[in-house]
Image (tube, rainbow, N blue to C red; front, side, top):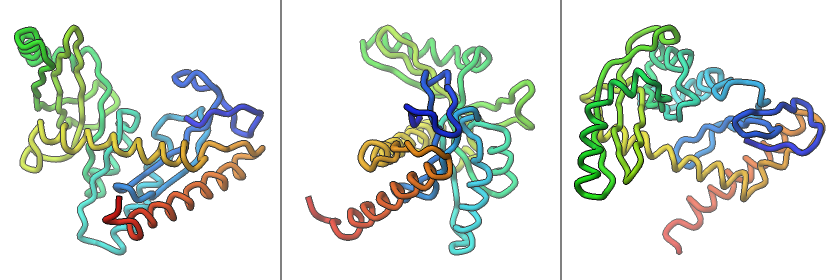
Length: 236
């Protein structure tokens, strides 16, 4: 979230963040910034993602037509429109999936195994289940879901991921631990923008002017990333 402290255009209160804010949409490829789009907070977390993916994937394929593209995001981007677009355009995806009672029941046996292992060793224990799943209404088809059954001392910690990748491309453990969890590094790129390069200084009156401010911060990020990637490589 990008908190607002004035009467800027497009100012809305967001219940999750408990403040008036904008919701910028960032898309990165590793450390490369591909999109920084300012959005109002009265929209879904995934709003505008398909439009941006169409633009970015089209540009990548025009230059590197044989490159395999896989998108990764948290559960805020686990939406039928995004998954269906990926499936129709030969783009892979690994997306967080918000847990519910049906999913937790499906992971019940693995959670019990993890709990017993945790109680026996006193340390965190985890195991995985790979299964097919479909929501009652929102999904158009059945999809592959990975359930991480984890028990920490005194606390259950189940997590779920939905993916288009096959078991041959990645088994459940590798898909979650190596492919999905690496998404957390993207959070550091956002922090570099907002905390280090003032991407949250969206104090102009209009949304368009604040988008320009976000672009300036993004240009600064690209320049600093180029310096880090090219000029400072191999140095302390």
